[in-house]
Image (cartoon, rainbow, N blue to C red; front, side, top):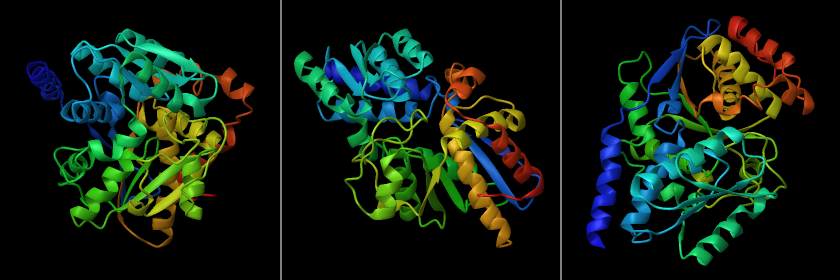
Length: 353
């Protein structure tokens, strides 16, 4: 048993050694010459998203705790990207993998999970993915990975090449190496917990902003202080926003939250395609809305500095939704006014909230 464990950990570490870190891409905003914006491009991981880091950490955490052994079925509750990455690592270790996901999950993500040998178990109500995952794990004598509980503790937030550590190393030679803000969304809450803990431990002045889409419990909980906030259905932006406040969401390490209209997220990725030259996932659009709000505030105060946010995954996973004109029209999402608003801010520095 110990021999298999050692081989499993070695395989994951070898996979890490084969991978370079992700790029930090600058985007100059013409209307804000004294504020530098950078995108940490997590879409270039082997499985195409930020969740590759999380999946690797979750597998190492579960292996080290003795929860996963040779042949153990692995079950995860996921809205898509985490399941893609976990399917990759399960295949690496020769383990069966089942993703319990909302039926609304994009077909591109379902195909990616199946490509890595995983099986998708779809549920109609997104709120049932937790109980259904636990049921399957019990029934199959498997391990429920439970990213929503363990995301904040599976990663070493003090350093050890986590996403915060790599960003600050990559920023070292930039005009403003210590960002004024780091902006990201919350799915599990694990990434914002890593950022928030890291900047405090490393004695940085960087503030952490979490952007939250419509129909998510995180923002309401943060504003009210009520950890039991819930809502019905999905957020409308895959990968972020949850119907309940997840255990890995740590509000005390966050400096600010901003609620983002879904149509603004969809428009933002169309705008970013024009100025970045690449398709990004919906959560990157949510991030960019937050960038505009905070950069506008910095401009009004006459501040210089830098802002870092994330490209969370590749937009080609959403060709049949966020990038499809028919899908947008069917949902009543008119992105044109928002495209004009982003262009106006980009060129002239005037943001209208």
